Length: 353
Image (cartoon, rainbow, N blue to C red):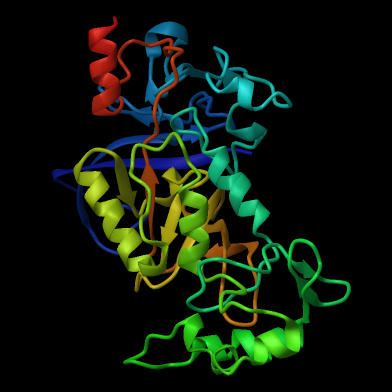
């Protein structure tokens, strides 16, 4: 299996490209054919003399092992020749069950690892919520991971409160999506909660039983102790649009970036739909078409009324965008001394060469 990529640098020349329906003003910088871990296929590659980046956008270090055979990320050197890192993972102590030299989870077709780091705290929290029912306007879930597919029931952590899936949708899921105040609903506006029916019939004293998409992402994102972005604040006043705006602000401060280039998405990134009304967490798994274009991403989310938190594939839609937070660098320095990084990291390297 191999991949084909076309690298364009917009310029003043005009070329006729089979990738476009009409003549496009661009300069073709390179045509690359890769083996799965990024080794260039012999006699199948053309590039300009000043080509800088290689497989998955990683920076090339051709002086070490030849053209495209050594790649620099923010923290380590990657070798496409044997499909792994040339140094130990700076976060190896967090993952004793995984080789410290593994790159891209041994799955370079589906996953990327641009920096050499991964936000496990975000993902671990997200996986803990699988099976939590969706509830519009709820940020704290009583039935966290409480779904039993055999009995089709939800329950709290100690099993003292249970509710059938049918009853949940009738008394919680559907009513919580009530359209009020110009289109905004809240768990607190559920009539069954306000009238005391939830407490009397099911022993549920509060209004927050499931969780909505922003409450889910809020909880998981704030688990990341290494992120440079600040925490999302005010859980009861958080929605997808506000989260997106915070990423835009963080990009201006060099704490994060937002992008529509889903070939660069990585595990734990936050995905927004076009309207910015739905927010999701990326697992880092992606699917390409036969032209090397990303067509689908795997996500974890709280999808909507009548459903619950789970992983699934999402076909990319026009307007989809994702946010990636930069993270605090570990104390172990990367092999290369010319890797850039966040402003904080560059200052640290300058002060402590």
